[in-house]
Amino acid sequence: MQKLILPFVSGFLASLFFHDATLALLHAAGTIDVSGFSTAPFAPLGIPEFIANAIWSAVWGVLMAWLLRVSPERSAPWVPAFVFGGIVLTAGTVFVVDPIRGIWPTGNMLPRLAVDFAANAMWGWGALVFMRAFMARDGEA
Image: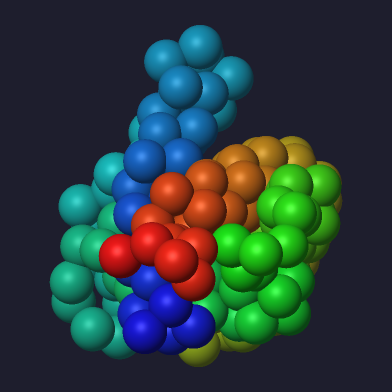
């Protein structure tokens, strides 16, 4: 259960509490127009964007836990989780999710990539926070 369900739930929660919260804080600071927790319908499915983002993030959470070998017995990979979130999720958004929605990489994408990197890196860190909080050591639970 700790290898699939907990990383899935951790990725989902990290999307809500870290990724979208980072976007909301950047919006409140006046640095970006996107406010986080978008209720606009996600193109192919019609569900709110923040729910679709949380579901995608949950899948990424399982992949991150597997690649970084997150377990209670090992020290927490804080920096790799931060980098995984920032680079892998941003690349996944630009090259997989957006083309599915009909959005193609064009023009000067640096401002968007910077915001995506910041929010996704915070997601990676947050997913690891939740994974470490939920995982029990062998003698516990």
